[in-house]
Structure formats: structure tokens, C-alpha cells
Image (cartoon, rainbow, N blue to C red; front, side):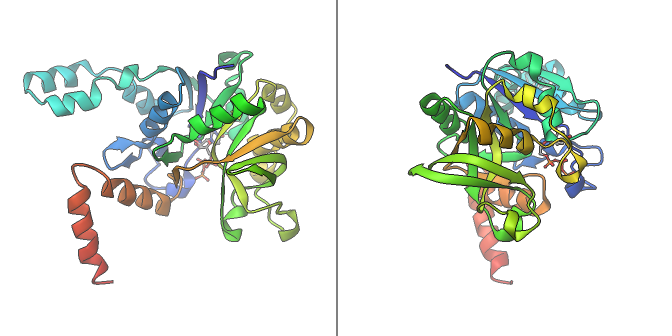
Length: 290
Ligand code: UTP
């Protein structure tokens, strides 16, 4: 079955990036000249997704504005003959069929995803974490969607992380099937004790889920941090029917923490046609003084 729907949870409070995120959603923080969430929508579209539900909350209205048309701005750019600038904005609203829903209370990623039940219906769908930007030649979501086509089970986008980082992420019980493809039979969110760590493989920002996840989420109790964790619901799926995990090839940037934002801007900036060369010179210059 072709996967055409994606859900982007973007209703978190972004407390790790305060004060930047006091009034500005972290999903709208720029990487060079584009907000993080536009990279995510573009990755979805490049992976065959046509319908996207973005989950927001109070104070995130500018995400909706970004994916709307801007008649005054477009007119002004057109009259001024600023073609390049006009080209950069005029098609954003038609990248995909984008809808929005609010998560009234910030009760965790699992709770946010459960808001998508009506949108998803009976189809498998992709979840793209709104603060994880993944950049590379092969879209990560496409690799996951392809693995769903092969194995017919929920798919997790994974990467190995450090022992220090695993305590803040999830840890997966995986067995390699071939190359970058694994079988996943269990997982834990934010393992604090060494004996709870299954492996250093963690879910980083993308998964394909069957619609059965909504029944599981209905009885998923609050877990780590008192939040309803998507990982806890997916653990039930992994332990019962099993899941597939794919170590995706593109590079992931965590826009939910300060260092991640800087890394994304530097690396994407270095490859940017307009500022890449200038940035390279600047980095060499300051690196010599460090
Ligand atoms: P995070 O846990 O990284 O986001 O959730 P957060 O809660 O904003 O992080 P802090 O406050 O800096 O620790 C991963 C993704 O899930 C969304 C977030 O917007 C982010 O894209 N999320 C999280 C929700 O949509 N709703 C929630 O209740 C929690």
C-alpha cells in the first residue's frame, strides 16, 4: 500500500531553546534561510507524501501563516521584479495538502500523535518529529516508506548515539537483517539505568506506523517525564507484531537543542549556493584563532 499521509507533531514547548522559543515556535527557527519545518515538509513531498497534518498549539499560528499564500508580499516582489525572492515563496502553500490541528494540552508526543486519528483513518502513515531536520541526497522518509513496502510492518528511523545521549532518547532492541535494515522487538524511552539500555540505537525523528497505533495510544499510561510517550506505544507494537528499523543515510539535526541549531546552520550553510563560499572563508579565519 502506498503511503501518502504524514503527521508532524509541532506542539512541544521547546524549553531547551528558551528564550528563543518564548514566542517563536522552535519548528520555525531558520536553517540559513528556511524554517526547520519547511525542510521537513519538503522531505515528506520528496518521499511521495501528499497529505500532511501539522499538530500545533497556542502561539504557533505563524506555522500556519508560513504555509499560506502572502498576496501583499507576492505583489510587492512581482512589481519590484524580485524574481528570485518571489520564486522562493510563491509555491510554499502548494507543496502538499497541509492541514492543522491543535493539541490542547501538552501531554507528550504520544498524546500529540493520537490527535491525528481522524486524519489518518485506516492507512499506515509517517510521523516526522517537528524538531528533527534530516538533510541528505536520499530522503530518510523515503527509505522508511520503502522498508514498509518490503516488510509490511511499522518502521523506525534509527541511528547509533553516544551512551550519554541514549539517556535522553530511546534505546532499541534490534537484530540486523541486512545492511542498514534491522528487526526491532522492544524499546525503552529515556533509559536511566545502564541495565535498561538495549543498544545504542535510538529512534531519531521518523517512523512509519500502522493505524493500530491509535488503539494502543488510548491505553498508554504516562511514562518518562509524566508524558504519554509514543515510544511506549511503539514498544507494544514491537513486542507483539514486531517492527522494522532502518539506519537512514541522511544527516539528522536536532533543532530542539542549541548546539543542534548551530550545527545545522553551519553544515547547511557550507553547502548553500549563495553563502557557502563566504562561510567557508569565515570559518577558516576564526578557526585559526581558536
Ligand atoms: P520534544 O520532547 O523534543 O519537544 O518532542 P519539547 O517538549 O518541545 O522539548 P523541550 O521542552 O525542549 O524538552 C519531540 C517532538 O514532539 C513534539 C515537539 O514539538 C517536537 O517536535 N511534541 C512534544 C508535541 O507535539 N506535543 C507534546 O506534547 C510534546
